[in-house]
Every structure is written in C-alpha cells, then in structure tokens.
Length: 518
Image (cartoon, rainbow, N blue to C red; front, side, top):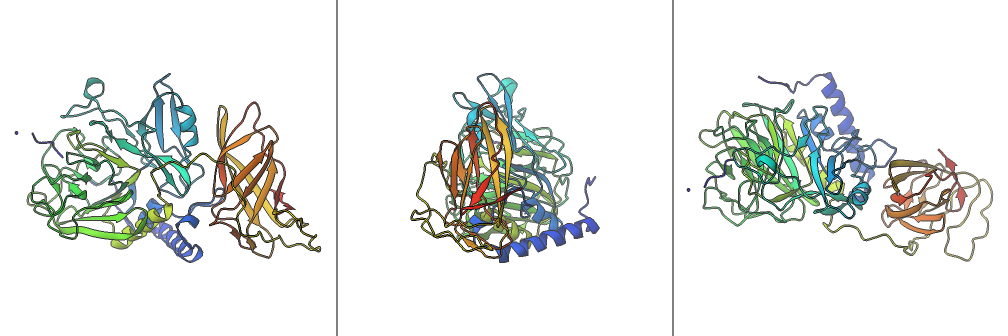
C-alpha cells in the first residue's frame, strides 16, 4: 500500500505426492482429535514425529505454503532449522535461533544468554519452506526507513517476550516506524492473477491507524506500481476510505492504493467493529479475479469469523500481484504502521474454509498464552496426585513414610535423554519417557544425577528440584498420565548451565524403578 500525504512458477496439481501427503496429514489430524484432551497436551513430543503443523495441513488441502515465517515455532512437522537470526551490538556477532526439537517450539534460551548486557536485533526471518524465501531487513523504497541509506531497521529481539505452551519465545514488535523485512523475487509464490492465501498470528496490542503493518505480497521495486499489484494482510485501525463501523483493529486487504475491508473500502459490518485479543489469527485470501475474503480468530481459543467476503474492488480484477514478500511496511515501504508478529505463511491457491478451520485449530493447540515471560524456575512441592507404582514381576516393597513414589523392581520404563542445543556455558535438553509396562501410570517422578555438575535453570512440562548433582523432575498437572506401552506426551525439557564437560546422565529411575537408557 502507498502512504498518501496532501508466468505461473508453480501449479498446485493434485498429483500422487499431494494425495499421499494429504492422506498422511488427515489421518494424523484425526488421530490428534481423538487422542488428546486439550491444547496443553497437543504440543510436540521431542524425539518423536511431531503432529502435522500449519503448512502440513495446508499442503494436504492442495494449497501449499510457498513462504512460512515464525519466531515462535515450526510450521512443518519435519522442520528443524533456524527460525530467525539475531545480532548483538556489543561485538556485532550473529546467532541463529532454532528449535527445541523438529516440529517444535523456539529454543529461546541461547538468545537470552547471547543478548545479556547488550542490545540484540532480529536481522533475518528464515523461510521454513524449501523455497528459502528468507526475509532480511528491507533496503527501503519510496518511503525511506531510518536505517543506513534509507533502509529499514530490525526489531529489538528482546522487546516481545511471550510464553507458548510453557515455552519462552519472542515475537517481532515494531515500535519504531520503518521496522521492516522483505525478500524480493520470492520463489514459488503466486503472481499476477494466480490465487493466493495469507495468514498470520498477530496481536491487538500496539496497533495504530497508519499505513502499513502488512504481511504478504508486494512490489519488487518497493514503489507503488498501481492498483492490484499487492495482496497482503494489513492489520491495524486504519479506515483508509473513511466511514467505517467501529474503531478496529481490523484484518484488511492491502491490494495497493487502498486498504480494503469491503468491496467499496470501509468496514460496513456492524458485527465486525474490531478484534481485540492478545493473540489474533488474521486471514486473507484472493482468487485473483473476482473474490477476496477476510477472516479473524482468537489465537488462543475458538474458531474463525468471516469479517468480509465479496467482490474485488473496481479496477482490481484481474489482480497483478508481484512477488516480493514483506512484513511490517507497505508495498512502497510506507513505514508508519506498527504491530506485532509471531508466525505467518503465504500460500499458493485459494484455501478452503476447511483448511483454514484446521489451521486455526492447530494455532489454538499450539498454546499461545500470556505475553509475560515465564517466571524464573524455583523448587515447587510435589503434585498432590499420588504416583502409580510401575508394574513388576515381584511383590511391591513396603512404601516409605515419605511423600516419594512407591519403589518397584524390574525395568518397566525407558528414558531417552537428548541435548538439543549447546553453547558456551549453556545448553538445552529433552527427555523421552516411555512406560514399557502393562499398566498406565497416573503420576510420575523421574530422578537422575548429572555427572559434571550441570545445573537446570529453566524447566517446562514439569516441576524440578535439584540438590547438588541430584535432580528430581515430577509431572505437571496436565501430563501425569503415561499409558501402558506409550511415551509421555508433553515430555519435560529444560535449559541448563555447564562448565568444562557436559556429559549426559547415565542412569534414571521412574517412581523408584530403574529405567533402561535408550
């Protein structure tokens, strides 16, 4: 969108690979619906195949992601690469921020360590598709940014801490006009009048009425090349044409030379006076010739609502969309829109309502929560639920008079310990805890000792106490049950510190029973 002052590259053919992927993802979704009871139990289990994520779901419906960006989590179950890059001002060094596990959540602990005592900037947002449409900081455009030679600037990497399913993560927060990211001549994205869908997770916090906090397609020239050359979500309280019902913020379509909430421009829907949630899912799709549709949802609960669906404005059919993918600014680099970004994708094709509903369910299941970071870990009492002893071929010994779990003999459990990331003085690790017995467990307590004096500094999906090298991890309120013959969903993981050597523990007990280390 312009700020006003006084050749198909990919055909979404339904070939055999699409059909196979679709069957796999649909079966996975059905299994998820019947196997889990709520959002907290749906996040991926390290060391096991993650549940289908947003872009897996879109692919199963024949509208694949051609660009997928997130600072909080993986958007493909198999993705295990970097999410974004940061740079600190103290020595200009760079660090890639990755995942705790494939298909999982951001591993933010290295960022906290790396940025301690200095300022860090997000310099690049990686594309999770094989197109590698990574978005660096934009070089600017008709509207000049505040950076060198009129370029834009990156967001402060520590400015937007959140928790997602108990994990610490960081979003992108634009508080200074001219904070923007962009990749030109993006590979595989829709162009011209090809149908296109866009979604993002944003927030009603920190919005404004100016142009343009966009995510989607814009011009490669970074100039206004006329109506219908953009197809992006604009998020904010801008009523570009005047006469809107309500005060916003709204999901709008930036189609260039206008931010549209209806065919005529302004919002006329009395039931769409504004969307106010800490986490908002925003949706826009455009068939390229006759229709565009705007939807919104609560990123933490519930389904989707259609704000508008109808004809493209006069002069916008057919679309002439260009192939630059942008975030935070307008097509000609209009710099005055402010907002927050956590994840989003650009799709080839006009996604079905069923696909969007399934993706909304995935977003809700991801566990977007408070924007307040988790408090520092501290010892907490054991859960009130009494752990169930593991099955054994020998009689159960007499319980001890303490609150510890009843010991059992024999090996009816296995534990896999994996170091997921490591940096100077710090590391991340995860557990896979499997009940190999024939009886379900209702409450668990895992004990082990570090061999080299390591210390746990932050743990999720459980409670931890540590005395010297001895560590006890007990279940959280939502993951106390481990069915017979299955691994714990929502398994614990942690960030820790080390010095010198970081060897893994060699022995584990679960409810007093020695486990096989795998």
